Amino acid sequence: MPVQNQPVEAIKPHFHVVDEQLSIKYLENLLKAQPSPPKLVAADGQEIIIPDSVYKILLQAVHAMALGKAISIVPQEQKLTTQEAADLLKVSRPYLIKLLDQGEIPCIRVGTHRRVRFDDLMKYKEERDTKRREGIKQFTQFLEAEGFYDDESSELDR
Image (tube, rainbow, N blue to C red):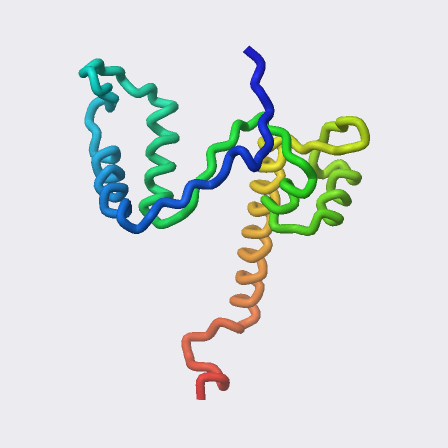
């Protein structure tokens, strides 16, 4: 069955209310402590074991919510507009277009419009974030080697 591409606005983040916080934290602890595969129990008493892949997603979602974060579940093959993709990367739309034109991120043409697959966007984001972390690590090592990180207090602390 082909996956329907629904607009991203149809997949809104869910913000939980403060009253739910205690229940969410309890659910998170319960899910983490499961020694055997967890089950769902329907109102009629019918039980079904939650598949491992679904359990992992559920645990990640509940953990994020327990931390007070909003969550969204987006199919990996979801196609995003250039504005939606730019918003997810927290960059301007013109900068995203430049990345698409340079082939940094693959895109699909739909008439005169470009669409970016969610999984391609997340792959680019992970690579970008990894490069940033490595750059910060190298810069920190350079500063340490040059003596910018001393145990003694600096002149700014005086």
